[in-house]
Amino acid sequence: MDIRQAVDFESFNGILTISDIHNEYYTAKKAIDIALERNLLIVFLGDLLDGGPWPTETLLLVKQILDEKLGILIIGNHDDKLYRYAIGNEVKLASAQVETLQDASDHELFLGTLRDVYTHPLATYYAYADQAMFVHGAADPSLWQHPDEVNRKQKGMCLYGEVDGTRDETGWPKRTYAWCEEVPAGHSVFVGHDRSAKGKPLTDIGQYTNAKGGTTYFTDCSCGKKPDFGPVGIAIIADNTVELLKVK
Image (cartoon, rainbow, N blue to C red):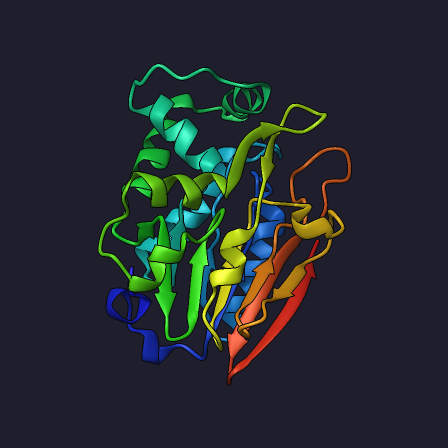
């Protein structure tokens, strides 16, 4: 998605990204308030769901932002899994999804809002504006050609990041970061999804610049994740600068 074509980009003072919210409505609201006060377009970096106790409230808040054309949504893997459940697909639910469904007091409102948000015209697997790209998991190098639609490989990396097909000692897929080396000079990618990317602390934002001069910002700070329920990471892109903040 070309953000400049999707919204009235020139009416904003810049962009504010909000990383993985994971049902933490009140933390998300604090980050959104910063964007509204500073007239910044909001880019949600995916994983709205699974974690905290306010799934429906979180979805309704995001839907309002999208409906008012004050932001866009990058779809995350947790959002994708529950959407597939919401449309009737056979999905193996993990404990996080079971808890989310239990916390949604109005089951039909939750599922209907999820369907509306996921299929919203301002929801996408990746987006870009000028030299910045926004994606949940990882940016396949071919995304720099700005395809109108993503193929299967691109979608997989957008949702799940880059993996090598093996698993670590905890059973999670091992993530790799070769894609970071392909970020072009002077360009930046803002991602969520990966709390410990390249060894960063779980509640901090990570930053990596390759030999070409392309930079990746890893902004997932464990919001809604047990046991620490960390802050939400935000990045403000305005006046050719990037400001990194944590909101709790």
